[in-house]
Length: 520
Figure (cartoon, rainbow, N blue to C red):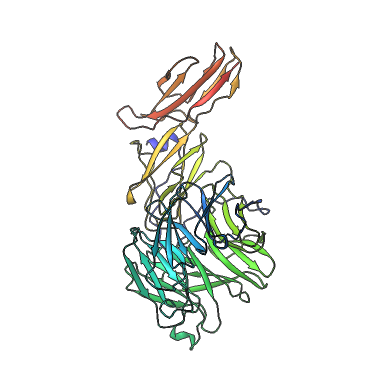
């Protein structure tokens, strides 16, 4: 009754089958969005992979410069120097709240905290392995591929490492020059990998490339050929919003984006008749697939719906884009290797703040929004996850869903709303601001609004004020059902307001962020 009366955008969705789309909120489909570029700070600049971090920033690797970097939503770049010759390749947030990355030239896995401190360097099990892609699984472990062509021990191995770095399990794919490259957790509950030179009996003796499904215990391995007659060279993969896994192909003469169902049915979608490779694919907050593409002297980002239809034409970007990922700001962020830049595609519509749930939890953990905004949670973490109200008011509770899924809720009353995901005890907060003028004149009347609707049956608002010269807050309106009131200051100075929503019998939000009115 409370959720219905307050007019919040809340529906308990039914269970979603793996093959059904879990739609995001569509953005306007018109001309290409703006692209903004930010240069790296080091002399040697060649960013490769990018991923959202636990701190609400984007984190990236710079292999040629031997650095791990982060970039804030406003574009401030910081890089952390590693040892010479480390060559960090791919990076991901793990369940311990740190960034885990592969050290391509050191046969190690690195762990860095969000302050840029290198915490650990764990040696991999296989020598001369060239660890390449890394991805978390729902049990807290990380999986990575051994990509080396030179070592017979590393050609066909995938490894799994626990967060203490002490337990490493090897998964043997086959006795061939497989070259496992990409890695991701799939919506079906398995790990998925690409083999650039994977082969199956259907391939008539050729090694044209496969997509592999591996159970979390590493005991069941299924390999699915992409083509039985042509070299495909599959690259990287990611879970899609339709319950499938999507992958890219570096074979430029094919120029395809691929999709594989949980059962292993592979479909390729041709992009255009140009000589270019698809690099990395991710899902945007709009529920579409976004992927990078590099040609001989150009770069583009494409957008495709889960049914395989391209949305508009490509977005021209600086040469050789590789990594791409959805940021906590709702925009798409990508790396430009040749120009040494991080690019941001501005696709986050105003009024719809985004929160990501990744392996480390919610990013950002505290999101401050305007009154009446619709928040969209994008569930990317491996495993089954959901968002539910933790204020004791029972405002929302969604069904558990796999990656990539979307859950939304409109906040029409000011306050600080705790929420959680029962999986792993993850917690976050949404801070909703009340509406008040920034500057006014003494003696003039102005409206203060702490809700867009009157309080529903059973709910009350408490609004507090701190007047000039006072040490703390006192009552402005207590236990009111009105959603706003006039305010006429008698004297000059700074007046501060905050509010909350509560139930008389218990349960309620925390107080909202403070709004200050400067009176002259």
